[in-house]
Image (cartoon, rainbow, N blue to C red; front, side):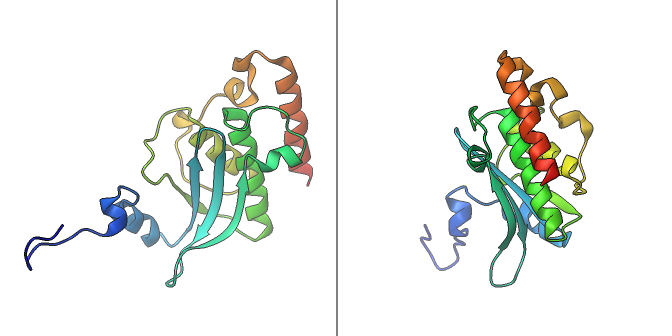
Length: 167
């Protein structure tokens, strides 16, 4: 911590390694809604966040745990579930009139074909315009869950995808 009057102590969230304020400022300067994607071992959370002076406001959100209520029987911590949650978040964003957004990864390292980019593909497929490169998105076989070698999961994926697109 500060040992003298001249020492500059970083913000608490910076000290704890939770926030990169330079990256956050760049995203906020775009004045677009941010698509915040956060993942844990079991779930992926996608939120549409709007900046306000008093604090960020979540405009719409979706979580892979909500897929269970819609009939998903597979795991919620994999790529197909992340895509479906992104699709659900994108459909909900369109209902509240969000047409353009920018991806906010936070401190996560971008990895080609990861769950974060599967969620992004779901949001884009729903109709929200988010700047991205097609190179980082996972291929269709991984999104459908064919790499998991469970044919019942790909069938269930297709059914749930249609259910989300219709609603």
